[in-house]
Image 1 (cartoon, rainbow, N blue to C red):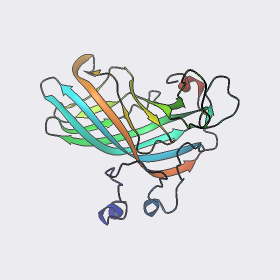
Image 2: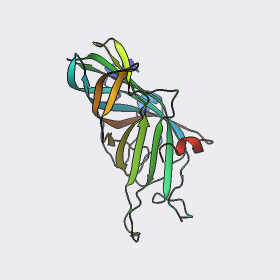
Image 3: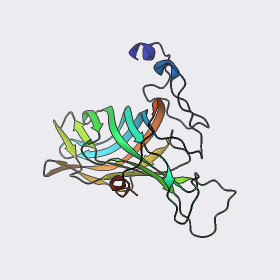
Image 4: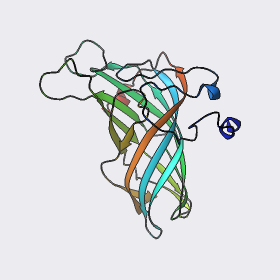
Length: 239
């Protein structure tokens, strides 16, 4: 993989080419073949998928200061089979579907003049994931309009701050990033927080996550998973 990057054979494998596209395919040179084609307003099969990820965090740390930090890395999801999520509907379509995904891994790294190297990871022992659900607008539905869907990603991030010498977190408080999407997986989508979160080293507050956004980039790997159904206990967490 490193040889491919150095030879520029895998454009954007470092997360630098995050963008929207009508049809998106992964890096077949890196993975040895064509990957699953992602189309807007289309339901796809359950799968295990890996992506490039860009995250930008606005953080304030007591005694160090405040900075905007850009981070790049890899995310791995287990996406579940679509299910009907709109009340009263009987047909599974893009308009009526809810799609859940379990967040298996997030590893992003960036450099800050204030904090040194910053690494953000998920917490595998917690229920983390995303739900893409119908945008339920009151009133009659126009069948000629293909709607965007609501997307909420729920994480319990861990922040490894070099100049702090500690790994800090949100003290058990879930961080939600939200957006509107027209495809799943949401390639090129940017989800954002709508509130700030206190950051803790153990029981002691040491700073604040003022804001964050998360962007899903290139699809790197896709493996169909036939039995990937959304667990009830997980889907109720972020429904």
